[in-house]
Length: 226
Ligand code: DX5
Ligand code: ZN
Image (cartoon, rainbow, N blue to C red; front, side, top):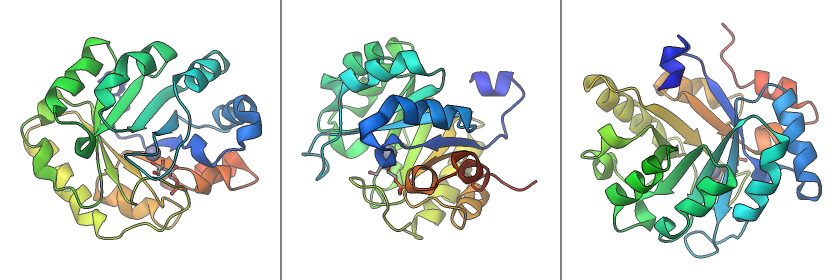
């Protein structure tokens, strides 16, 4: 991945989740987190079927795209995501993650993303074992470990996900792969050091950033102190 080429491979990347932003002024919110030092903008796409909540679709993503240079990371919490990969890619998503639980053909859908020259990730719900990605790990750019049940912001971090992050890190290191581990759900200044220690490199944070008054301070608080 380009991150390694930039000699930047150990940097912790902070991805504020737009789900906790003020939806009456989305563009302003995106501009504000970019200015505050965010690395990635995490876009939670929910269909009311895979998860019990509905958010927004490609139209909102394409409307925000001209306002930001951040990496747009679309986390598709939708049933049969293969139906909408092209739409989100064309809307301006740079990274696209799909849930292993939501598609029958994970490998095919991952390649659909990669063929559009986007970074492809698989998201795993807290109960989903790592063996579902064992035979496709080489095809992935990142893995999203859900540390809450998907659907809502502001939930409590599920501690039992820590051994899963460690196990995934071992799997990746053993095979000498360059795959980012992303974590999503309940990440704040207390849980951030724990997930980083376990091997996470990309920290999604909704309420811990957009729920605070000072976004720059909130982003800084999630990064390692050294
Ligand atoms: C939950 C979403 C998360 C959510 C995280 O389904 O995937 O991205 O926005 O919110 P916090 O950081 O508040 O737990
Ligand atoms: Zn998410």
